[in-house]
Image (cartoon, rainbow, N blue to C red; front, side, top):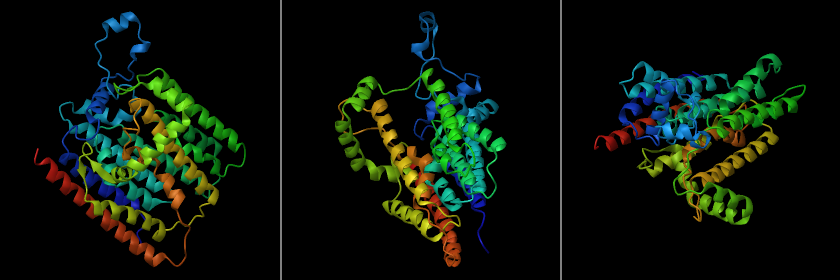
Length: 399
């Protein structure tokens, strides 16, 4: 029997292990979960926007009793599900988690369903321990990561679908995706693949229009909102250093990547809790090996153009660079030799770009091995998530 519906396996595994991991993980044992819970509670009470201190009048500052936190400036879009859970069951701390988990499952299941390519890679990546750990929490990453996968899946559908691009349907949907992405921690990477969609007329005009409204939306929200920074960080000084000392900053960037890249890879797979719960090292190696074996044994029936691979590589490297610059400006004390605050989970929404970069075209003789490897993949994911639950139980039952 051929395994042609990875979205079904994803939905089952995500729900079962998502629920298990949720109840095994105490509240606020996911990074920044308390601040995200507070923001979700604000949204549940109808507080969609927090006016930053620099925008307040003297009278407003005098009368304000609001305590700003790390998630104060985040868009309410990412907290809709968790806010609904809190509103419905205000005394149950898991209510918002469950709602977030269900929306996370729904969005990624839809992504795997609609994409004509990389279905098994979507499934495997979404079921990594760190992905589920974020997905079942109050974190804004629960929504933004799942939405990023759906956005990429829709772009892949437009690139590889046999139907002609619909100006009446697809442009409004792309606008909606772009605006939602701008309000979801800046999930706009998929838009950069729009030039590869087979659009007959005004392709680049459409691309510029989509980028413009997305960046404008992002600017409108971020320019009039609260921006959290570390207490020891001088953002203006860091900005000046990046702009006026590019060689010195490049040295810091290279040192950071050399020192932390292995940690980034491991934490993308899963360093749980507050980065204190590690899996066995063999698990990280096996997961990486299996990940790249999927490219080899489960090949795609559509031709992946070299130009698309090159461009995706450029966008992925640019994403890493921009992440490093942002964390240097916002989180790194001036004068430090390495950038601090970069976590592997930040790279989860960009991983579909790797699907393009390493994706292989189909070999007609690989059907037998492909089906066998799909079974190996499903078995490995099951064992990996069982092991993850075991580690969480061993850790938190001692608390």
